[in-house]
Length: 194
Image (cartoon, rainbow, N blue to C red):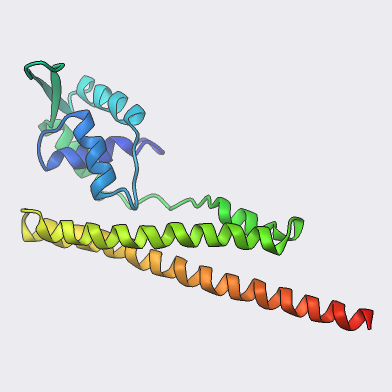
């Protein structure tokens, strides 16, 4: 199995629920799993072409009056087998690259104020993400899908919500620690000059 190219399995998985165009896939990635997985159109379209070429997908063209033709993709038996083989593998170990934490780690090379600005901006983003999770939760409940599909969607969303709450708690803790350290440093500097 190819290491690193998981886009093909994300595409196959989305198409398991039914035929879609490349644009439909992009929209579904954003709306349904954007909190833990993202794919750009620049990744999706070449992947669709490769999967079609290898026989994992079939494509049909839909005519739309007054608009360009639409290519709609669906999974073949070969594609289903490929997806099943990938699903049986243990998930790849997550590699973390978090630029905020990199900047926090190097905070002594800057100033507490600048580090606090980054954390506050991140906290605002996470607050917005929490709002989106609440909206996604409502969408999941309103969608007409099987109870089993709804269960797994809820579980994936719950992971994101837990991570979001932990990130917000970390922001509060980090800000308090920096402010406390800064106050202690100011007080020590004041005593030293007396």
